[in-house]
Amino acid sequence: MIPNVPLHNGITIPQVGFGTMAMPPIWEETAENTARTAAIVTAALDEGYRHFDTAQMYGNERGVGEAIASSGLPRGQVFVTSKLDNGNHGPDDVRRTFAATLNRLGIAQLDLFLMHWPLPTLYGGDYVSTWRAMIELVVAGRVRAIGVSNFQPEHLERIIGETGVVPVVNQIEVHPYFRNDAARQASARHGIAVEAWSPLGQGRVLGDETLARIARAHGRSVAQIILRWHVQHGSIVIPLSSKKERMRENRELFDFELSGTEMALIDRLDEGEDGRTGPHPDTFALIRAHG
Image 1 (tube, rainbow, N blue to C red):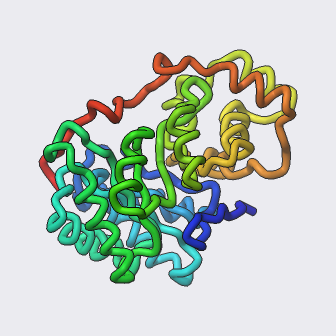
Image 2: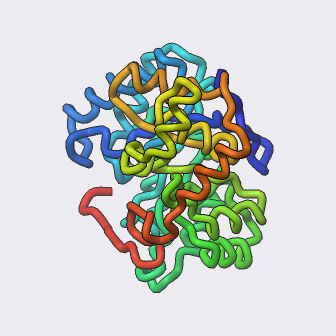
């Protein structure tokens, strides 16, 4: 049974979710991608996942929505997150494309909507207006909660200081080779839940011998050890896999526990900025043609 993590606005989110980034062969909405996404998400639903993470950027919201609709599960039993595409930061674009997101997902209300990247080098550095437009969506009842993704401490301080509204989640890169301590600690100071994307370091950490020794001691896979490390740090995790055996393995994390010594050993694998696998939020400025 996957436990729920309470968010500071009173709602809860399953601690282990199912990521859909790069699930289709190309990041565009096509009939092929919709069908493939729907099949994979259906398999994840069959394996007991009830938290799904998609994004406007991924081009697969329609496939996620079709799988959820076909599952027959009550809407309240499935937690759905989507994220604002980088080309949609203008307040009018936030409103317009959020409506399109609801339409593609086939739902009346989204559970969680995140600003995908702060983009401080674009839009005149104004991501606060984007945040204000997202706040309007909560006030209107169109989304239950809003948060951010890839926000550095200074980005968090700015939107909170200028609007008084604290994100419920900061979805950031975190894995044993990149603990991302500054962003995690800044989030914790404000009561913001940390959600780890790329929780397995895009596979880079799976060959680590320290993790392999700990995995052998517990009779578990290295991936399970890493995900359990995240869970014991209190993070929400969104691993992804198209294989049912991996889906099952990635959620079987709650019948064993890492010792304090094991947690410390994994913590010491951190490489600081050298361990980062994704782009840096201070400079990332990619805008795709679709949106």
